Length: 206
Image (cartoon, rainbow, N blue to C red):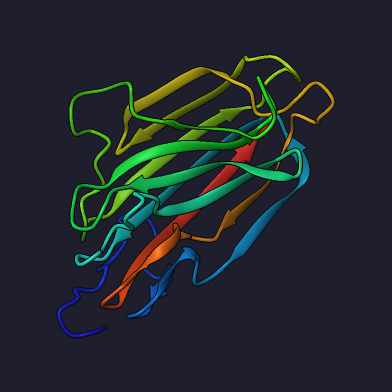
């Protein structure tokens, strides 16, 4: 581990197996340092994900607030992603963001901000393991009845039932989970190396 950065320590769930993403000093925003995909043999309309994550104690949030963790694919696009929203040393908030949506108009993007639970329940403290659970339901093609629900450390912090992931001509089944932890959307640059750790990613669906 680099000087001044405390390692992740044992994960609460499976301490012997931890995934690490390293962002080197001078890293430029807009990409992720790694990418690994889980492709479902049979796509699912309802997708449940549970995993543990930790940001290094010196994590510098991108100037845009975008610190993506997982990309979730439906209808050929990563139309939802899990974002630890936060700028520089400010607090990181567990959010579900939507992009390139099929309804009500093509390419619509919007941010699912926490709307449940007590104040601060969605915060992801640097240097601490957190459990993030997500349940997504594909909408009836062309209708605004898709769903997104998420929990941090067992507390529900977000719930939306008006999501339009796919248009009337598209398939409403989730196909892929991608761990491509993209730092920002462009611009900005790190001045020191930092890390994101993920452990025990579980996914199921129907």
